Amino acid sequence: MSYVASTLPPLSVANSIPSDADVVVVGLASTSSGPVVIGADDATEKAQRSRYSRGLPDLAASLGAKPELGSTVVLPGNPARLVVTGLDDVDVTPEQVRKAAANGVRAASGLSGERPLHVAVSLDTVEPEVVKGAAEGALLASYRYEKTSATPAKASIGRITLVARGGAANQAVNVAATVSAAVVQARDWVNLPANVLYPETFADAARQAARDVRVEVEVLDEKALAKEGFGGILAVGGGSARPPRLVKVTWTPRGAKTHLALVGKGITFDSGGLDLKTPDGMYTMKSDMAGAAAVLAATRAIAELRLKVRVTAYACMAENMPSGKAFRPSDVLTMYGGKTVENANTDAEGRLVLADGLTRAGEDDPSLIVDVATLTGACIVALGERTGGLMASDDETADHVLDAAEAAGEAFWQLPLPPEIKDNLTSDVADLRSSGTTRYGGALTAAAFLREFVREGVPWAHLDIAGPSWSDKVHDYVPKGGTGAAVRTLIALAQSLQS
Image (cartoon, rainbow, N blue to C red; front, top):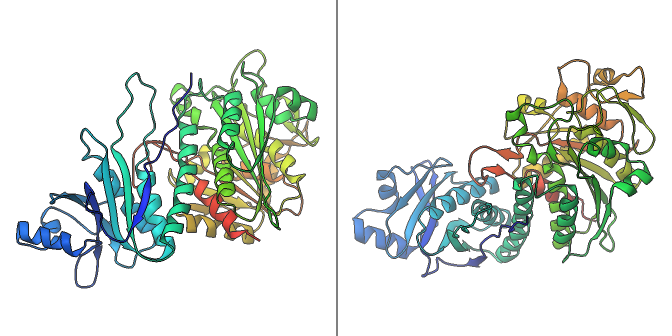
């Protein structure tokens, strides 16, 4: 079975609201003197006042419009309908505009009929980062996963025009389109069922995604993995009829002085192995490869944007299944590089494939290693479903990654790695255990385990995206299902590392 990749509507820039727009999205912001409408031109204001004998702010307020983010109200218009979206404060940030534009576009998509709509987003954006935020919000909100069906779904939005001023608007929109396409690629991969996306087909999809950019792609199959000693990936994938893969993608621009290594967890389905999950706990485990999806999609975007930073990405792909060939609790595994691990729980498999990937990444002598993984339920307990966990080798590295996340508009929170956490990993039969002996501090223990496989002296950050990688409901520019978490942060991090 194959799948149809999701596509985003074309996005263009205009200095004014186009006359052929079907729907126009404008903003409502709070000021000291009361709410004001942002982005409506004189013609729109005049048409509304002529038709309803009142200005746009009064009309919008009478229909329930509020300045708060998330508020949207549809106004009848002539010739275009208006969507008033809450901007919050009039002094906007890129993330405010990203959310406001997304909410407006989602409301506009609900107005479609037989033909796709032309939506204009007019939020009086000028600064490049704010323009970029508006463009990303509009594009990401228009994403719809193409479900497997005999009847293809009709597109609700045919094209988007962003009304923006400033000489850098076009460049900002082009960057936003590349970043958004990468997020959508990651979403698609996460949403695919595990009978369609498994290690072999995921590796093939990674090759296909990189075909038109100047990156090198290398795929190690199960024979190559065994020859080179990738014991963690082989153990986790050993119980499945679908063997594991390790995908290496390299972007090497001329003159780059900084080398960013990315490692992603790519468990295409996690049954828990012999430590079997519950049926409810297993249902969304096709998404356990979101970390690998993030690093692969981000690397492609970094290459497409031609950022002057060397990037080497490792996607560690396996399917964790129970069978007569499955690895067991208490097995001792020899990892890539020779370190031995006493396996404590077959449902703590992600750290094992990442350990192999981290060790291999360290051999490339990178300036910084970042791993991304849907690693622990404990991180969701600690931080909720919308905030990822960040643990790092040092505070300077953590601050650098957090700055990139803030610039990208993604929420991460630094968690500590206190020295005593390592005591949980003491083993009587191997170099270390894969899990702790208590249920406390599970996210910290997992990160402490990973740290044991990071090359000494190399800065390292671990992003646990178990919460934000999947959403059970739509909000702002986040869809139901796979979210593409961490893609924007990794791209922003690469931008900050350019030579």
